[in-house]
Length: 347
Image 1: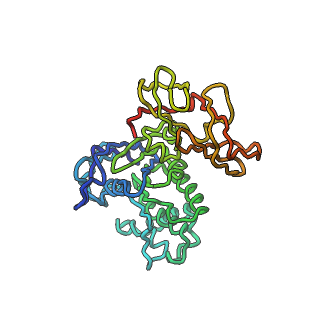
Image 2: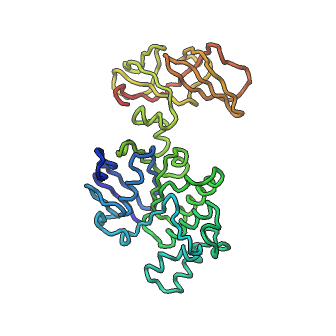
Image 3: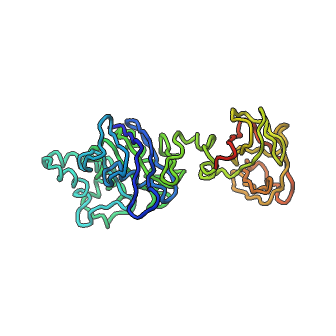
């Protein structure tokens, strides 16, 4: 396994006025499982291809451990990329597909057979080894593509939207498989996804990209509780924002005055609070009333749409009763420790 370091890495596609990847700096530790997360077109897959050597950077450097690999050919980098569409050879059996890379490296037949057999067993494909890709389900094809990559014993494994083509139940199964195999083999892994839930469930750390730039890096909890910008907060499902003016430990807004626990500088700010952190009822501090525009019973919880300072907020509360609050004006409270404060100009 290898650590990976990107230094001011950029890539411009010909004819495009803006860089697809814009001067990013990012380090991945040995054995770490990291997600490049972001919306379509933000530069995630381009970054993966740069690391794999399938694209040449416009500028910047790529290091595996302490060795610069920026100009090293893909076949010599010991990084393997698994593509979204698997790219299995349709005329080969699964066993032949898995062993293809080893044959290209001209290993002896006995070693190839042993490593392929071991990988097929690890992936639960031993009984399917003689089938062609067209005879497998989507999940089985994904397992075969992973096996073909991992049998090469790469130092870096690169996964491009590995679960996007699978049904929901297969995605859950493959998540568990990827995590189990990555932990058992200890291979440094970077995977691209646009699905925040997938990134949260799999990754040790998340690197969130917008517009070719990495906006924030850290563990998933950081993005939920301390987003670096309003756009990041929205991407992680937090649409509850309130502008105000911070002075010492209080923020004054059109809705009321709120006690906060924040070291943000005094001045215009935006308050952010997650839907599940808002409490029903007057809790004696940071309370306000708001009209309930809609209530949805979800079995284990209720979802409320309320109006706060002209904007729609979402509230998620335990389904302790079936009493409808819709159409009424109801008290809510914001726990001080759950409020995140950002300077207003950051968006």
